[in-house]
Image (cartoon, rainbow, N blue to C red; front, side, top):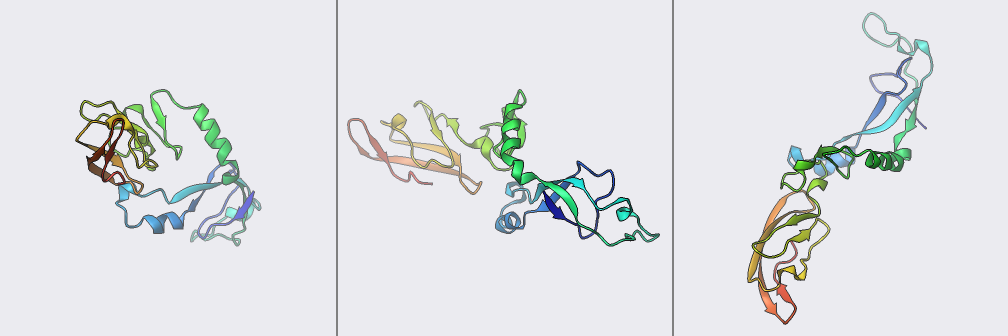
Length: 189
């Protein structure tokens, strides 16, 4: 449970089950330089209304001002249940939809399409990218190396999602060859 009160509003009788939204100022400050489409959501579900002080808490005068001072209300603390919520949402995954790491749903057809449809970009992680006539390779934000699937190529180009959400295209050229290995320059993007 957590107690809180709004600056301009109050919890009233009948509000049980409604969301309490909190602003994530850290996410806002760290992403202000990003284009709007790449910024994370700043508003988070932090609580669910459980109860408040009483019936008279929401009475207003003719000017719309609360008659009694705002009192804190009691909310269910959502962060306490985040693992349970995530687990159950994964079990209920909708057919033809992809569940993003941030619990957002996007159409399955939008996964690995070089467009960031999940606000966290997870629909573009671990995508198979076909390079020329070589076998396909797998890459992700967490990966900065390419397997030996590309041995024998003089060079190749691929595009991947970088950690900051920007798209990068990199061209790699072979610099060293041995019987089973080819080393490529510029492998870290």
